[in-house]
Image (tube, rainbow, N blue to C red; front, side):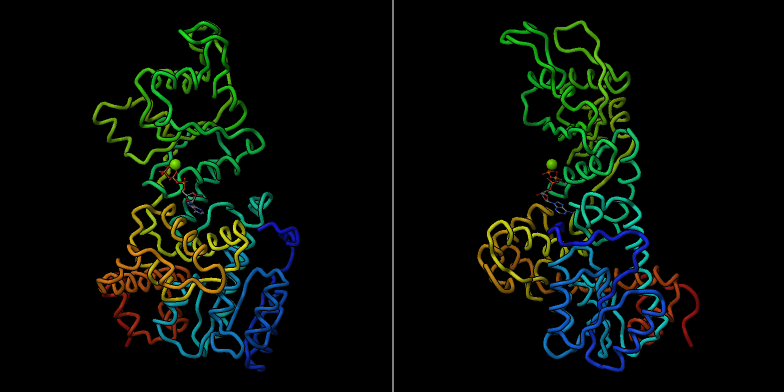
Length: 460
Ligand SMILES: Nc1ncnc2c1ncn2[C@@H]1O[C@H](COP(=O)(O)OP(=O)(O)OP(=O)(O)O)[C@@H](O)[C@H]1O
Ligand SMILES: [Mg+2]
């Protein structure tokens, strides 16, 4: 992200693909096929060269062989990810097996191709990555960062859909209620909505409704007249006025007292309010985004939260899933945090060893992304340079692996998620999916049937 050297891609620019492959004939073939389709292709004939190219160039897509002299495809994948988030990396390997495909996905690869593959499959996968890149370029989101949804890091489909929805609602002034467990990134999403909206140059004002004493909150929010109450020496504009033209973020909104709930409701209905102890009606133009890690509907049922206000606040309800529901986000988040904490401490951690990443992938993350962030900060500080190892991780993260079943289950979950995603991208074409994975159709069918996802007749 923005180190100044990055070129700002425009929609019409060719998509730049780095191809790393040690088999010269294969490299040449791929180069020609991609160039014929209009891609700008840069080649590297071994791992070291690929790493060097990554260090001094900008690529939209990286296509790399796994087995190469110098550095293998996984090292290329890791380097690509520490340099640029959301970088689609496609791995190719002659040793096709589902488990290596799943391993590649664990490390954050975009796709995996088993050799020998059909050039059509290769083109299909590169073109789906390119479509994604063109959409991102067109979405004008990269006005502020070359990373389209900056600063929200993700790879999962669930987060992608959430952000696409958020981007749509950002254009309106509809109120948004963000719900989700603690540490999932609710505030970050609220800020992203602000940045994606036309209000982005106006203030984003956050109020933590649980941190301000009930008795003060009303005057903090809406301001007060001079002498409105004991101690109100001067007058005060209130937070709502500070947010004029921008976004007001009401965090932990479930904590509002009945009096403030009533006043907020009136404001949302009429867009007008009065300062405490004042008779003048004032208008402000603010977009309200609120958040809660409690289920507000439940609060409504308990009678602790006004139903009419709940509906006003949640015109657009958004739910941020727990991290354990979207484990694919762990690798890009880890690389993002490694980069962040390297920068903050001037350290040179280069990535994470596969066994350490596995531990992070298998953990349940009760504290969600915030907890992962803390774990990464600690690991970067302990490691300082090189690759993060299991012993740099806290005991509870390591311990959660000890009941081996958790690991096995999550590997299967990942396999299932990957294969189903692939199936979706291939429009349900099982032969194509089997070919990409380098497994036979019957094996694929058996798996799909076990997951209750088989469609059509078993292959002969
Ligand atoms: N997708 C993400 N990409 C990058 N950083 C993230 C992401 N999600 C969360 N974080 C980081 O994790 C931390 C917690 O996020 P945030 O404060 O937005 O969570 P929250 O849901 O509001 O938590 P709480 O319920 O405890 O208030 C922050 O430092 C945030 O930057
Ligand atoms: Mg929060």
